[in-house]
Length: 374
Image (cartoon, rainbow, N blue to C red; front, side, top):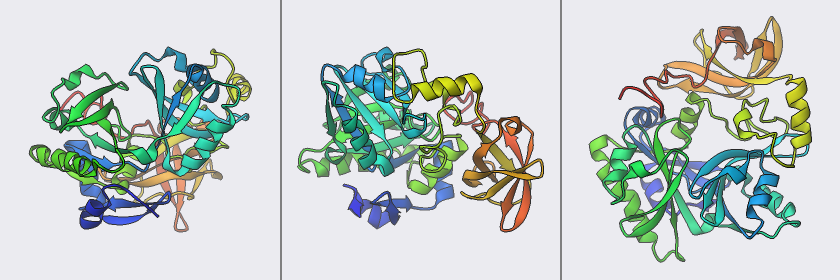
């Protein structure tokens, strides 16, 4: 298994297990406490296992517009965009974020697809003047998430973090290290993702100092180091997809309710023909969210029943630390994707009642990046 640069810290303080070929911290103090730290205060994640690559060359824009479903040409310098890469049938090869960094692009994608995505990009780059560079091994990536993330990070940088708009990036210095700070994350909360560049491990100690100083300066905000367990429960509560579960090459962006990541009116791109057809005729299945009425925790693969017949299966499920209830997502016929509709989930041989709910699962006035109250 691959090990992260901060492996010694994670081994000393957390519970480690394998994920996508990496030995990763699953939790430190506990999934629930780490989950609530992010919802109420601030948490920090080491997400260096994520895929990262740069796209350079005079055809970089045209190439990315061809291999992704959104319109990359609309990006301004230092702006980012969530998108998908699709196959010819419209199925999702991966979901990713694309950032325009002056005259080149940075893409961040899922760890389980690092090799697949890189090969996919290389295979479709032959007709374009571009260079694709895998920089995952040259960089580390942290995620600082929660309502007090800005307060915590602001103490460590001279620049005003208010300068960074949502889904934008900016170069800043943190303890002498040049850091690319991106405003966003995958927990539903306000926060930042930080990419630090290694120099043949010569600055490894400095990168550890950045991590430790974030923890030290975050004590006032009750910061907690967080593992993959909380990352997964937080993204589920926010209604975000997990590749391999909620997204696959057999699921299209329209079926996954990722319409915003598709610009059908731009030029040609891989999967466009299939997506144009699907948009016209409609989908036969759609991602929906549900909250358990009966006590029980839905898990991946559990059968979903609607109108007294099996209609799908749970693609993501678990216990919501915030709602104190089981929640989940799955694909059902469109007529069942109506708020308040009753679905039954087969849990250990019993059919338990649930209700279709809007996502995110929490009250957006009280939680999440759009919250109106602290």
